[in-house]
Length: 293
Ligand code: C2E
Ligand code: MG
Ligand code: MG
Ligand code: MG
Image (cartoon, rainbow, N blue to C red):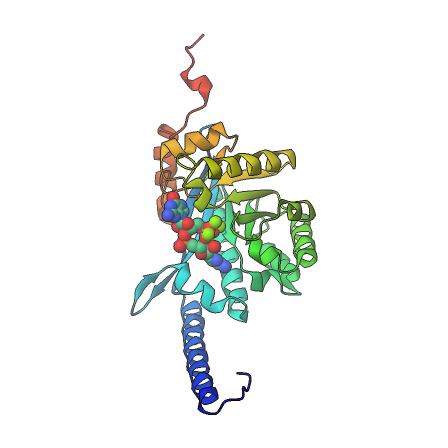
């Protein structure tokens, strides 16, 4: 740490900082070992179109099956490696594993898109595009639109120009990019004009309040209208009940994810879930209810 005047205090803070850095280094070491040992896996949360009654794709979310502690959530390892080269390793692993899942689903006759969350660390890397295209070359049979990357607006606004050129390069590779957790950062809507994202995901904190908080509903309405005017696809995350979905649909947001639709599930459960959902979608197109001619 920086040297400060003031005797013993300096040593105390230095010692604390040192202990913290040591702990962080140990945690990172353990994450690196876990990645090498294949302890990480993906779960998939469906994204549905409420207006059409269809399934649009899956979001891949990382889990760590830690040998001693059991299955750990991203909150336990994503922040630990943010801005560390390990976040690139996790990102590349997640993209590879997600594309592999898409390939297997396609082999069983089902074209689904998959979205992968990527960290600012990966986004900011100079050679990220070269590495992404190398990864994609391993999957030549990948269908168009199969891969979507989700970036946080907080990572994008760190360096707007860099983020914009990253997104543009992704588009050229046939990979679309959406802005995740929209509304939580310093989400100036004007940034959206400079970032060639194909869509945005409304953060759960607004979505949760859509039935009860008139102000959050007004914000949602504004964001949805503006996003549509800009030609962006809008997804609501954190849709926990059918009523939440209906309220969002009324505001013009057609795409949704949330525990009310499905919790994230292992790859092996995806087909079973799809079969069940298609028999009984939570929201049905209006024409389904119309009397037969
Ligand atoms: P996210 O991308 O915004 O993903 C949504 C998170 O909300 C997931 O938590 C999901 O399980 C949870 N969720 C979904 N629907 C609902 C709902 O209806 N109610 C509630 N209360 N929660 C819901 P999870 O899996 O713990 O992931 C948390 C965050 O960690 C993700 O937020 C994403 O930013 C990050 N993350 C996950 N996997 C990766 C990864 O492979 N790499 C990176 N860099 N970040 C990841
Ligand atoms: Mg996400
Ligand atoms: Mg999100
Ligand atoms: Mg989130």
